[in-house]
Length: 449
Image (tube, rainbow, N blue to C red; front, side):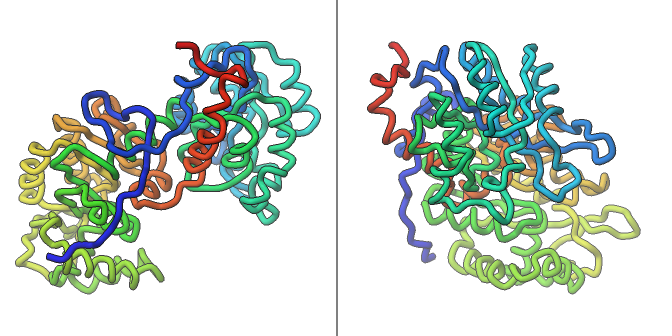
């Protein structure tokens, strides 16, 4: 069949994401903590610590994003570190200052971090100038500054001249970022320091770049991508990007996107299920339907669609063969035959990407398919990459993150990379590398060999 004609972008990474002999042929070069010596230096550290909070008490419901900073902070133990982050956005119930984040992170690292109720004003600058090597300060929620977020947020081209960038860069030697969860966005604290100082990928950011670029550039083969959940447009964009790059062998469609693809493949899934899909997608339905039709028409040989499904009848799970469609009952999971065939497929895979649940797993009766796929991926012998979002959260909730090669911390950012979108933060790191890598020695930042 005719395929999508595409070219491989030069996406890159300085070292390998997954330990072993598999090295991407092309990599986006960024400065890493292994390239620089930051002992005694003043470092701006942008993290993504945006966390779910209890709306009534403000208590942390999950502190995993704070924990994700620990590797980098350990590497910066001899530096003067100014921690920058955001929590939610103005107008939301969980939009708060960073004092609680500062307290929780202090406990996690076993060191008192000073909270500064300022961002780049005189109080923040004074606190930074008073620091000694090993000290850490946590400045306030950067989205409280109008340049960073909201109606008065500056344009990308004006970021270098903002108050945030000009004032903080005047008292710092380098910028380190682990804000992968916001890597698909522009703002002064995310992309404004590109030309001002060496911008360096922290441990988390480096792992994310390396692992996800491996998944879209040069994965070990055979490579199986499992795409599910309810964000059908995102899943189909990922599928078309992987096919266009010529890197994927099988694309498994499950969850709502699996139901959509069954429909596009000529199966009448019933008026209720069709209406539910259209309702979830709204104005995005028509362009997404065109992508689904393209995949079925041009790339059917690469698609693994559900062989059977599970529907809800009187709040109970019932198996249904495709030959029994259409159905008036909601299709909430894949069936046993689908999972059996999928197990055989995954057992032979050398690389597996999984993004999106296979079922309405919040309903206990229908969690089976998603949990089975989770277990299959954990048991697989090849490289296993979880693409963020609900899938990553499920892996964390079940304490299984250590059983995967990489479990992404970014939802939208992971999907953006997998879809081939422009990633402003990663582009910023690459540009800063090009400018400052030749100057590290002159700046006294070059790591001794």
